[in-house]
Length: 435
Image 1 (tube, rainbow, N blue to C red):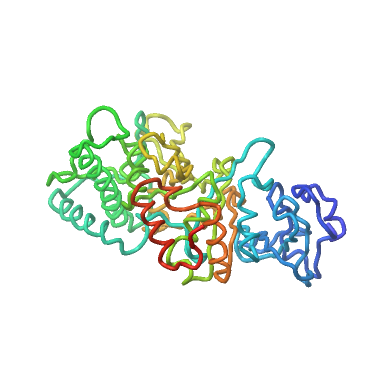
Image 2 (tube, helix red, strand yellow; image 1 turned 180 degrees about the horizontal axis):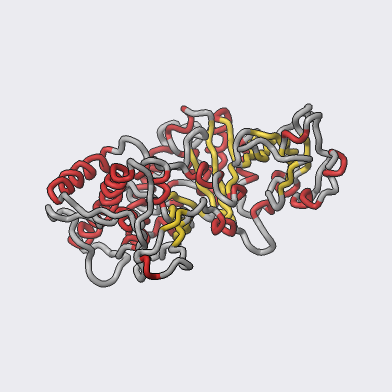
């Protein structure tokens, strides 16, 4: 395909306004081209280098040798965006002002809509260089570290255990899968890590019940993790790590997340401005290169899955034609009932977690991977997009949101957050003056 032909190629129809010029470069086979909203992406002439995909950056400058200017009417109306090839599979829109940043992130913006459906959800990062890692998977968490020590001691007292790396569907148990020579060591760590997460959530459940606080569960309470012999599925690390399959955890994990306990959930919101607020409101925002709001296409999450691991049949006599069971680490959406969590309703919140994450952990020799990398390695790398703002414009963006009455008390309604907003207004905060 020659550069002139790209303009009329079917892959260029994703942007309403179309391309402003033929797309090409001297060695255009090294670059990816496509639409800003990734309705389609095509490589001009050949396959791009591994890990290089399309990114979008707003720019008022003339296109240079390796850039092509396109009008993105659905993105930022009066502005023009520049497509560049970058060594990342996450497409990026870089706003050049606070007004542009918030204009892009309006939920009414056409770039987020497909007919009458908005499939995108949003999550803010106060530092654009941070990876998307759930709090439970970040290094040096003092709360989890303390629980891990307790669980490790209990395991030592309970050992030897018959630990087997099988897959348990509830109605079918596989044979053992081979995860390499160090699998036993990593499986033990997986058992400890999963039990530490579960212990905090179960302890919160019991603490709320003792205080007669409303719980989002029915039926009996889960086991008490404070019992000295409590462990969480120590013989089946892969089952232990599938937290979405355990009693009360799908209901209680979001509550634990919202009240500051480390979990494996990643926060998202159907309200992009709410996500922008939390990124901008964080005190560390001014210390980094800028802020970022990630956008995740919920319609494509079903394809955010990695290559499978095969688990053999448990018994040979089943027959050679039955190949067992395949497990693909995959991205899961969690939409909890909001009635027991007012903050979740105010923020239009939902969550993601990784299904089959224990399989992924063992395949990576005991490492957890950030979500951006996970999506990039999946069958749907275009499911993720990010909108960024340089730190020079952070105060301007904060001022705009203040004037629009987007605040902590509007997104987390309570007397405490209302008082925080009042204190901020009267402390000479330059972007939060009384109105």
